[in-house]
Amino acid sequence: MRRAAIWLLAWGAWLGVLTGLQAAFEPKVIQFVIPGVASAACITSGLVLWAADRNRDRDERSRLITDSSVATGTLMVGVALALVGAGFGLWLILIGVGIGALGLGGIVREQRARARALRGGGTR
Image 1 (tube, rainbow, N blue to C red):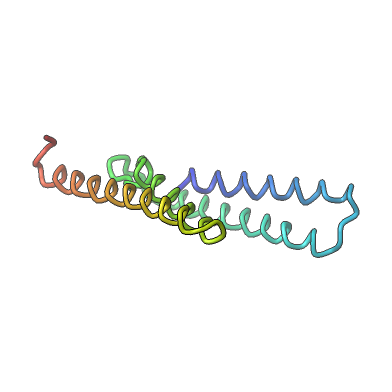
Image 2 (tube, rainbow, N blue to C red):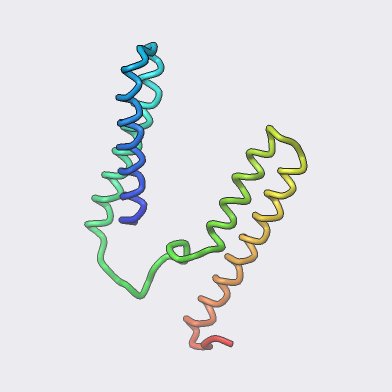
């Protein structure tokens, strides 16, 4: 979870910098409020995750499969493409669904391999 906290903190800081840079363009108040609140929410979430990670016992053997999974990233890219496809058309939705299906298949394969390794079956 520490990596997630670092990303949230970095993103919140970047949004804060971009919010401050808007001052040169004399924007309206709402243009400060929206990224400012998003920045504060990211930083707060990152700090909560960081604190939760510090209180957790360390066990290096038991890690979430999503920490090192390419299939999880593939699934998320597919979902993102399908959502963006809502604005661009059915062709992009179908491409996103296909990529998402590949990612989901990879996650299922990884879970089955993990269960087999925990039973002591080893790998093929």
